[in-house]
Image 1: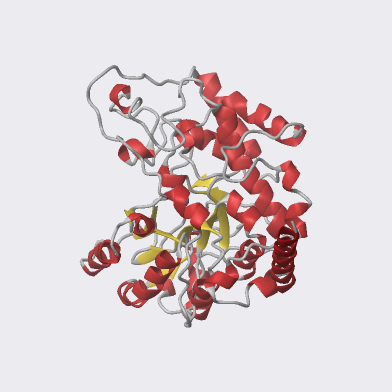
Image 2: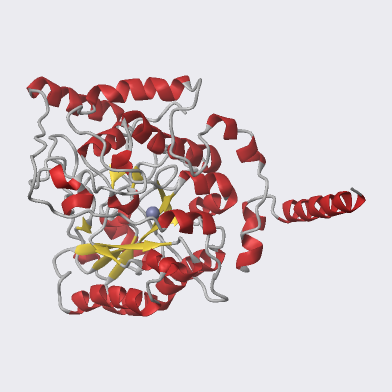
Length: 438
Ligand SMILES: [Zn+2]
């Protein structure tokens, strides 16, 4: 008994020492030692609100008694097409879905056939490429990673701003790391609450998976995101319409580095080859008329190290490396527009600031879309080497049996009449870009 008490006192002492060392964003940003960075800490800003949120890393539902969320869901569910049903499992097993799914892809299911142009009228096209030539759209998924200080230093040191797709559960676990993302000028978007396959959720679950990360990011960083990326790219028109109802633009990608698979056996050389494919396409002139979006992650030390290693080659072969918002001339990054909130920039403005005005004439886009998009940064020093184990284990869940199938019946999709289409469009206009009551 005495031994146990001594051990307990020692444990309490250790916890107390950790808490004393990390008390805010600045103290959390000081260490570049991954083991130190990833010591859990207790933050009042999270403790005060966590009972208003679903359990972290668990599939979300509307929290009991959350009348604001329920009201928003009741509003949005009026425009959710009942003809599109949930698909597969939360872990990405679509083996019961694909055999009977209409190969014409009526739901615009990205997982099925990389569809980015929704079949429902009034829904905007997913962002997967960029209008500016020879431009690399810089975005990182699955943050905030507890060990990202070296990486974020690198981005800053290289004048890189990125679009960061944060997971709600990570934001709650690592609030000061999330605050740093905003402080560094990155564009913060969201990547769901628990990082599961979104088309597997029922309507309310899909709503909650998007609603609560918005609420967490707002509570912890002060800004309300206006963009998201589906984990594994798993999105269809039902999910897109829920996202649009929450004022979120959907972003996917054109190239996938598969960098996150390094934590489950894919070799570093293979991932490097995936990067080289994009770079070789740039050398071959593929992006002479439009830029591209490449999927990269801050999920582990290895994925962050890989980007830093590849950056010189990317820089040499692309004219511009920009956050999504700049390439799409998005000037409002967040719902909030006050003087203390970072604004977006047009491509010409961004290039003038970061590239000293070179080749501003290259700006060709006339896109006036208001939605924000992601960014990035950098510095030298010891590379982050510790993965975020919680995220890594979840990310490791791979989609299974997602293939084009030409057998079986087609699941015909249609929306019920013109009046429904009009109401969909009307509600989109009324809900997009309007501050949530969170
Ligand atoms: Zn992800």
